[in-house]
Image (tube, rainbow, N blue to C red; front, side, top):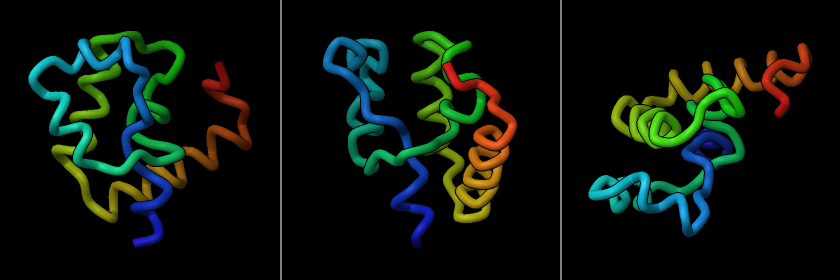
Length: 85
C-alpha cells in the first residue's frame, strides 16, 4: 500500500483538464503520486493528449506489481539522469 502514496497520475493544472474531456472524473477519483506512468514513459517528450492517455492507461491497468515496476523505473531514471526535463 505504500506504493499507492508514491505512484499515481500527476496532478493536473486547471487548463489541462479540458484535455481529459469526459474522462476527467475518472482521473480525479485517484490520488496523485510523485511518480507515475506518464512520468516514466516520456514525461517532457509527451504532450497532451498523449499525456492524458498515459495517465488514464495507468488507472485502467493499475496493480501493485505495476506500481513497483514504476518505482524501480523512476529510481533508474534518476540515477541515469534520463528524462529530467
